[in-house]
Image 1 (cartoon, one colour):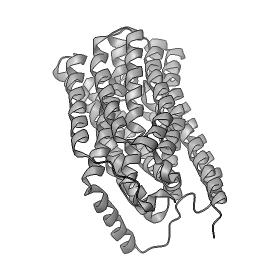
Image 2 (spheres, one colour; image 1 turned 135 degrees about the vertical axis):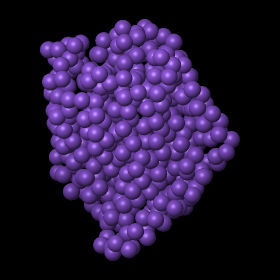
Image 3 (cartoon, rainbow, N blue to C red; image 1 turned 90 degrees about the vertical axis):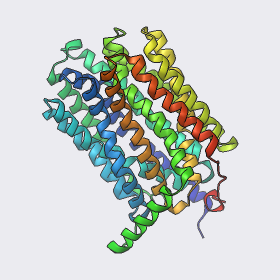
Image 4 (cartoon, rainbow, N blue to C red; image 1 turned 180 degrees about the vertical axis):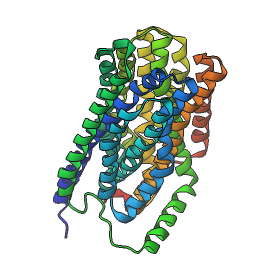
Length: 421
């Protein structure tokens, strides 16, 4: 018979391992994305719609591969897929060294998207495996700890771009150097995983069994059908997807708006993103504990409203102080939504389908994250660079989605199978 105390200790070990690996992986990915990526595309002469494509294309990868990655982790085990995702974090950034045109950047960003497409849903499913009744709290802590990497990555990327010899007029070689440094952090994440994940007990990272191709295929199809046919799963996942639509738009165009319209420098543009991340980082674990005790749905509704209001108002101000204030409001809204949505989806499914659930959640999340910068870029082109007219329709979509969720979705209590009792 398994000793509950030993299980608890091993679960803590699994949690800390995943958090430490995720910290460096997210640091690498964040430095590659905001604000360096949009400014790299701008340096290469990309128009607004092309900048949106460059920023959003890596998330398109997740749309197609997060669900398969999550389902396969249910069947074959978590560890091998975690390592595969971390290999992408480690090696793909060095491909940016060969980029000298916009389409080169689009291609390398698509392949870089495999990092989070594979690692993201599998890591979340592993946390759900061990969290039991504390899903929202543990998923929020995991997200907040790994967000520290994002918190450091965005300002660090902006600082490097500002500090390098090219300064505000950065040369192509400066961007290549930054992405070489980014690759180094990805290698650290991979080394940590190879040295620490291998020591985990089978119960800490789901262990796959030898199965025929037919068995794998049948379980894959079964897992996919069960999750995507559940209306509440799809709608709840869509809330974080819509929230990430505005998040993706801000990732792409807040740096450009800050530098070209508000007159801020690259470091200040990165700092704005850092402020938003700090708020999310601090608030998420608190909101996760509240969600576990009092319910997920009210927090999601409030968070959607906060994000919509902040997003719509950002193009109406041009000072660093006001932009920072709206970044804080958006950060709180993101914390409310993201602390509860994934846990609410996990509550709706059986434990054996956690990978499929997180894959479904991640796929819809990425549809929003990818469509945000692309839609914002097209709207900016259509409205001749007017940020308010471009952002307003996306904010309205967020509010309409919030109303749909509020009036159609029922929050489910934890089933006996998920309770961990």
